Length: 303
Image (cartoon, rainbow, N blue to C red; front, side, top):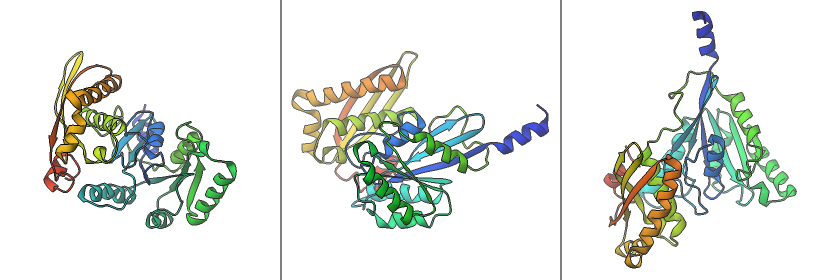
């Protein structure tokens, strides 16, 4: 290809950040995973499952879409949650496109502050009304009208992330609004996170699935060792909790609960990494980790 043609093709390449925000429990991470085609974010029925800002990348010859999944919007009660909301505010400020996820269950004016922000953004805004598969047509039409009036600059789509309904129209709208730009990441990248991060998130996901009450929200997972062999990954992780009673619940009688957790996490890791995994889990008490700046920095919540 002549140099002028190469330059022209480069100039036609599109790339940008689609930052996904929304309240907890609306299926935001399910939608992010469905759009990217990879499991990047924890997906459970519990609120506040996403704590970090996680990027998933779609690459073709003509474009690169960087989907950025953020924690669910909430009123912060401690330093960890304040840092989580910083991810959301940063995502609004540096987006090429905002994808705001709501659903047919929550009140549309929940977190009115962020609804107002959407109507004043200069970048394109897409509003996805999720979970239409558990609603009726009259309610969906009413919600579409409400959002259309409150955020007149937005494109509003009824979707079902679970059933992957109407996601193609969202993708088409993203491509229409993607700015001309060279790629931000290498063309073979699918996320900005490393394997250690996904190991810790898989463990945390199964803590959320297997334990009830406040225990999952008082836990943090730190991968202490990650040895990559040709046929097996050897992983050692510590689960930090805030109280001795939580440590006892996590371990269970004779270590039974921790063993069950380790087995479930290991099997999912093997499916995710496509390699055998040897997983060692330990539990320690760190009573102030959610408020400690040094602990949050160690767990990747502060620079």
